[in-house]
Length: 240
Image (cartoon, rainbow, N blue to C red; front, side, top):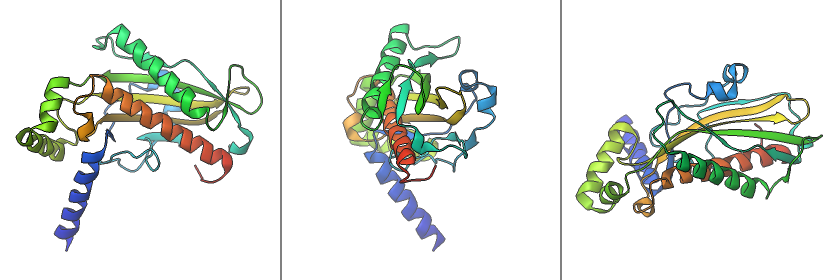
């Protein structure tokens, strides 16, 4: 019975991962602490293990690490101030300055586009205004040609699936990690914070995308997830 349950779970997980354009993966270090600050960093709590097979559906996924202030009255926050997205990398960062700029601009535009559907986006602090600060960290590029081969040629696809089972990621995919915090724009009180890491998924439609496509898919998932979370808390339709 146990073997059957495990086998069924594995099969379902593989099917889900094969349809996903982006999937959550574990965070291996604390590169996010310099951006968030020590006080915020120490408040973060790991959610249930995301698992190597998590497709990270924005509607249900939780960040790898998160903190939500239990004393916040979310209903008072109807506006949001989005700070420019910054890139925080290592000294030997391999991503070019142009790619860093392109990704942070893409991240900001995605945040503005999605959050504006639920909140009034403002340019100044004030009562009822949340301040959002986000950093993109440690983005890596996919290997386009090899990615295409591993996804589309049956024999290579089979090997890619075996790698996924063993390691939780497909070969030649890109990745990205992001950290963010939401504060009261007037008092500076921390409302929430999160850190998450994602890699490219196994969906066939990602096979021929460009080298930063996996990072962009991760950004799209994060911005949708953030919008869904904040708006549901503000409306009182869900609890943090």
